Length: 428
Image (cartoon, rainbow, N blue to C red; front, side):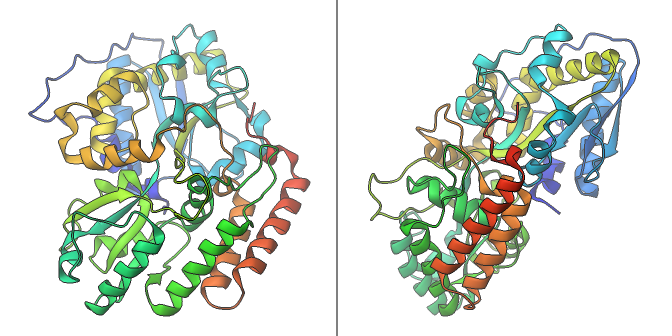
């Protein structure tokens, strides 16, 4: 989930025309500025890099700027702008002095930043205690369950009635296996999906308000143990710690997958698959019923120690990204969650007919999240690695679920205790 943003190709191909169903909005206004070279660092794959270069070329042409695309190397000093993915957030949290809040840069550059118009559930984890934006949450999503309607039909299941609960899903997996599917279910981003989001949906967050790990409670133990029984039965197959499983679903090998809501676009032409999408299942024996899932994704962070002219240029580029045309095209092409009011309004129109179902499901899954920030285990690189190791031990039948989660929590809290900055919900 290279990382899930390798598929930014669709997102950054912004020169494409809009759908015939929608009127073409006016071009975003980009005022010419003095040509001073500044940089945007990323660690995308070759296709994503090529597509990101296309949007930068467009911006440079329209503004007269000299924005240069460079590689974001782990441990290197941040440049003017840095595209940081969810699984790389620990670098920001542990080295916060290497970054400056984006609201500060925009104010000094005299560029408007209307945080009030941003979707509250998306900006929740990138605002400080005063509600000011510290990074730009460009491409966010929430986990959902994609399934192959053709596989459901073959198994004698109603393709319009996907599972609502994990218990209901188990019976469906058995029928899919009986129908000949050797991979009834898989998942990308196992820690993000099965620790962070299963915990949130169950109403028992994976981390406390003080930043201590707490995902070894009864609901989490029962869930991970259930996944272990599914592995033994051949219902569940794990292919990796990131988005390796997405390729398996795309090739028609697996009947169901839990992954990013934005992958609706990636799966549109999946081999032999008629795509269905629904919310991530929940455990109906948890008190309080189904709770909201989490929004998360890639954010744009501002590097510290750059010149005033570089910040001026970077602020202009941020304004360009927030313009209605670019916001609408990002959502239409990428399938992520709209950040601005313009993007949200367009998502409710006919512009996004092709991604409408996935967006509706994502919104329904997030309902009620509001502006509450949430700690994510998957954001902290060393903790995520520890948790991945322990989950794999359970699902390989080498360790019981309770012991593995207890170990994950104790080892993870030891890491957080050694690096207190990682425990903070707000990096600034």
